[in-house]
Amino acid sequence: MTRNQWPRTRGRGKKVEFEKDSEDPSSIQPIISPNRPITRSSARLSINEEDSTREITRRNTRQNKSEKSEIYGETTSHVAKKLKTTTQLNSTDIDYIIPKFPPIQSKKRKRLPDQTDIQNQTDFPNPSYENSLTIIEQLEETNKILDSVRAKQQLLESNHNAENEKHEQYLREFKQFAEEKFQNYERIITQLQNQIQEEDGRKFKIDQVSMLERDLHKEREERRILEQDLKKEKEETRKLIDQLEQSKHELQQLQLIENSKNIGELKQKIKRLEHEFSQERENSKKLKKELDKIPITDTKQMEILAQLNLYQDLSNLLIQNVKFISQNEQSFTCILSGRNGSLVFKLTFNGDEYLYEPSINPDRDAELLNILPDYLREEISFEKDNLDLFFWRALNFLQKRESD
Image (cartoon, rainbow, N blue to C red):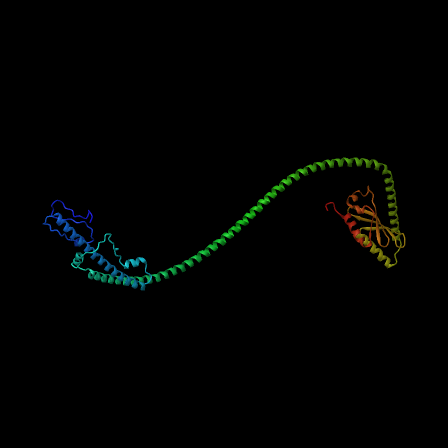
């Protein structure tokens, strides 16, 4: 016994106070009577009796607690077996069904029992019967709780099935909504792709326009450079033209000087040709007069002469003279008349080809020289099949107007 466990007195008081070491202080009763005076010997006796009663109460409480723990262990195991039959119970549900009891606290101080303790132990009542009644009541309550839990479980299962159906319905609706969204997104993507293609086409066109503008700018620059070069070339050509005109003027002067020497010869040749032409014309007139004088008796000759006159009238071609140079070679002196003048020429036929020899007077045929091409101003030869083409071209130039 320590110092703190001694009873406390205040002088000669009648009342004795004890410290609260036991769990059930109501069962502890003071041994010392209140009217008896406290002495040293009485204090010792009271202390020994107090210790014995405390030890007995502690043993009884320990035994009761051990019995309670055994009964509670059996009930908890029975409840756990019943709980095994149930399904889908959380730890919170089990804690709700099985009540939690306070743990048994062990005492630090232990003391061997005495004979006085064993004799005094029979004087206290045993609470095992009351504990068994409370356990039965708790079991009934747990059964009720289990029934309510089963009902709740069935309700939860039905709610769970309903929730599953709702979730499935929500899932189907979400799938349908997602498919519609996906289709909308695909449509939007196709529209965006088309817009991107159009924008790419526009960009390509813009790039082409910019390229064309750059090319146009380059072409303008090149054109400007070419215009400058052209101006330079024009100036050079103008200078060359001036030089050419000057050279032409000098050439004309030289030709005049040279022609002045040949003028006499040309005049003599022209006079000779004019004399021959006048003689030939007079001869043709004489021959025609003689033919007119001669009576034509043969009808065939008359037909030939009529055809010849018709050909002459239609073609404006007058054959003045015909010469037979050899058996296969003939010479025809012809005059072809037109709006622009008359062309005098000689055709010589050797059997395969015709030889054209013009007889042009520069003074007389000055206008005709401006119209005739170069190949009709000089001697040419052509085949027999091209005679009509030659005649058509010569007549075309003679009939040609100045406006044409």
